[in-house]
Image: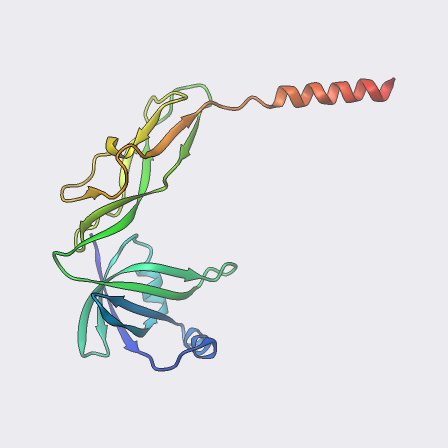
Length: 199
């Protein structure tokens, strides 16, 4: 997995006013926590953080005030609901060799069997345990030729070496639904309504 280096600063100002000032400078307020240490309040470079977060569960090497280096993964990201810019980020401290529980995106490949069936992602992300510096970016599942009623469970998904499921093996991840034919009844109702209006 990719590792991104960011230079960050500790911050001593808190509250909404301070957060607004930080964002005006194209920076993002955040908190680093974990390993029983006190939460560390940080200021992140906005653009670089945005680019880093495009990779799910990205491993971030933090240069804090040019004095200390820490590894972390994102745990919670808050974005403006309308404009989409980053408002706040929570990061979790990790160490090389440490096992962490994360959720990785589930991707699909292939075509369903003919017939207008629908693919439903019951779980769009899969909870797994992996070594902090070897978190897979995603897993890919083949849905080639699946018909209505078929489902793929967590245990059916091939995980990268060193990665374990952190969810029940029988949990349904993907299922195939039959296409709903609801248009005919609506058409009949419309015809009946038209006949009633003519009468």
